[in-house]
Image 1 (cartoon, one colour):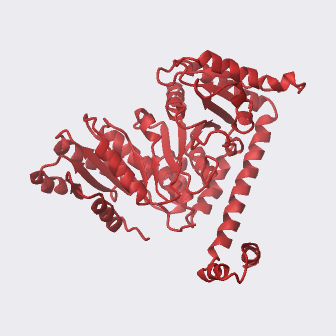
Image 2 (cartoon, one colour):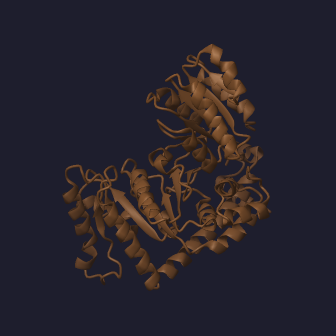
Image 3 (tube, chains in turn blue, orange):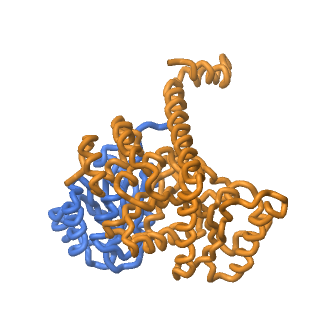
Length: 135
Length: 316
């Protein structure tokens, strides 16, 4: 038995866009990298995402959005998480996000943004490093 | 406030009904953290009050959706509900995709519902090692109905019967004929049988095949059972039949309380919890002693697994 328990990550899709292939690919990559991944499904409110993160006690929340509403919804999710007392949960995002929005998102508490074409391995490595995977 | 890992504080806050504290306590229990035993000692005192429901059946039978429907019924009556949903861990990476929550997100923001996804983490039989500890956290949190959804391994997931009070076996119209329903295993442990997806064709036949198979014991001259498992047809997607199912669950709970069966089952649950604990600790302790040198000895044929195993089990 391997000691060191798997780290838990929530993958969520806020807002109204229903395209979740990208989110599912991330779920798959993280599962195969040894994470326990919970997926909320599409069309979630920031409030629902924060409640799920709280009950699942995850170390990170990954947000995927293709509709263009990331400037509203990503910061709102961060706000809800902090309000729920989840101060240490790492929030990262991906989807169709223009380069010029990235610094504003980071200022709003989204720690990393992965645009289209990001190799899956670099997302996994980012989480491994920042979630202190001791394996 | 974020939940800290201070046991007395966590215990107090879980018992006060704080979800953040319950969530952290669950992690400590599931990860078999050093303080988990301190928490478990207190939480165990809350056991035996809530009705624990097991939802088992093959993958894709609609267990999670049905669970969501039952939660909605209980919430309409203002009953605090907890749900534990188990999905398989990868034997390759140790990771898991916990996908049950997706079906019950409509209850995400209801303060009267606490749901948690659990990975099986190497345990076969549809559950996870820490399932009892997880249930006790929800009992301490004040949940009065606790739903446990198994991995969905199908025919052989019988451990659930020594974990919960009431077992729902979920199947669908396309799951086979009377011969399937006659087999040992999951078919023997159901307190209520559910033919879900009853909107599909063949539902009536599936219901009568199940009833027929359940009646064979009596035809074979066995004493009639005090509780005859009902067969309920539901459509979790439309909600049809869910009221009848909820009534069946209540009737079973009344039966457990009014007969000696409730006490007998609780005793069986405690026995299973003790067995889980001892197996886990003893096996883990022995496995931790396995060294690379032991494996090299096996490769060099200097010893054999049985002799080595015996030695490792005896070592302190």
